[in-house]
Image (tube, rainbow, N blue to C red):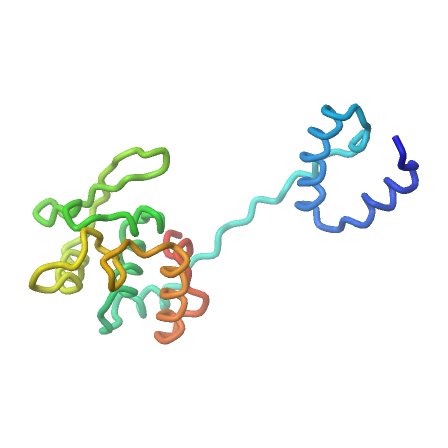
Length: 178
């Protein structure tokens, strides 16, 4: 062991964030077990405070739902808001997964588990307007101009930009679920 005890003390005291300290402790426990060192002796993981996720205000939800804008961003926002889908679930929806007569969508969730989410008549009308008439260009409900499924980063940027334009600050996919 080539480091002195005071060097270790200076190192541990330099880490201010409990989350960062915990990450080092978890990593160094494995290193200690592998190398036979004692980096984490006497250092305990700090319990983290559970934070309540930030949610939309009522007036922000109203702005989203009552916006007369059309397009992918509104459709995505309203779909996640009304069903509680994760962004990856919403982006993975294929047009054939939507069952308009039953007002439900087959969703592939975490762990590749299939489930159904239900939506209201208002959401059904909004989705029908979004899809429009004519042949769709893609299998996916939310696709780019090439017909490919859009990725979550593009969707997040799109929602943030759309939210800002409609008076909703810091709109991001997860905020729509709460």
